[in-house]
Length: 206
Image (cartoon, rainbow, N blue to C red; front, side, top):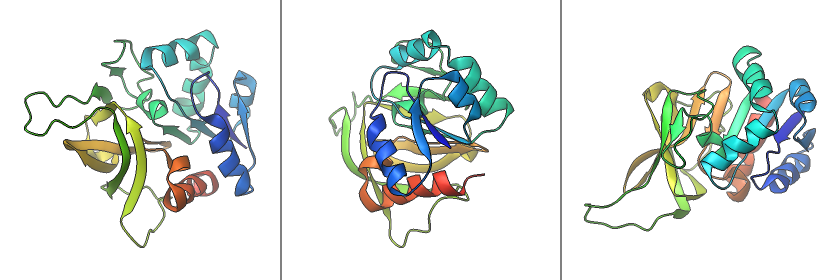
């Protein structure tokens, strides 16, 4: 069973729809009991980092998530804001994150640069694989995924960078460490390649 964690921030039903279309047993839940029994977890998210951490805390989800991910090694996938919550902290809100990855979340800042790119970064962008997770599909062509974000992840170790992209400068577009995986892009909005990645995570990760 794949549990999509509901903490009040995220486009949950589009992810549920995609998983169920692939006949993957899945459900949306904010129940610690359901999370405890899950085989895999998906943590989506859209919005403010500090509010997201507040919601996780107020719903009593942080202890069970830490146990599942850090102790039980349950596979987890973070999407957009969800993956940013895996980091130690964010420049948005100035509060600690879950700290599952040695990384921080920073805001795009192009001041002083010749090219003043708009923030947020919205649209399709290429993802270059650096450290390929075993479940990452063997795409025949370069992978382009759909992004919409003002903040990006900076990892302390390149070993945790599954994929990177460019927007003014290089940034982490996918991270991976053991059972912990995440994408800054939205696979559920990324058509064939995104759907395939979501499917492979849900089906193949043990």
